[in-house]
View 1 (cartoon, one colour):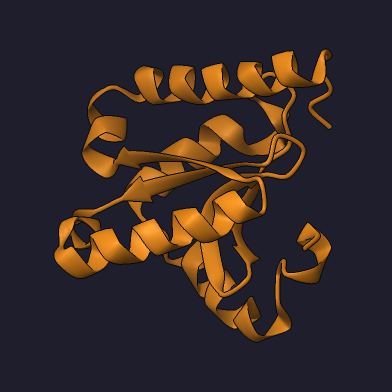
View 2 (spheres, helix red, strand yellow; view 1 turned 120 degrees about the vertical axis):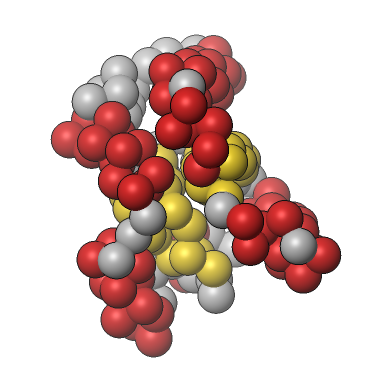
Length: 132
């Protein structure tokens, strides 16, 4: 299944827009570091949908998803939903990195470095860098 067949469904447009408008403080902090190709030239999308899931941040070229998790993710239901999401994305070849909002707030540089490391793995796998 190709990404274009399942991404940014029109039925989720309003929900994606609301999530961008009323996002968390943690999302705003991370978006500041990712937008406009600030992180090593890689292009990111915010609140991008794939299938029925809306990803917090997605780098299409690297097939990398970054999720920021608040308290609701640490309930039995939240953990199961996150597992289902990660399995679905893995079937499409998309890797998922998860960070607690608290970790981003306390040590934002560690989150950025973890993302950079995952992007570097992508570069090594492809044999070249092309963040476009």
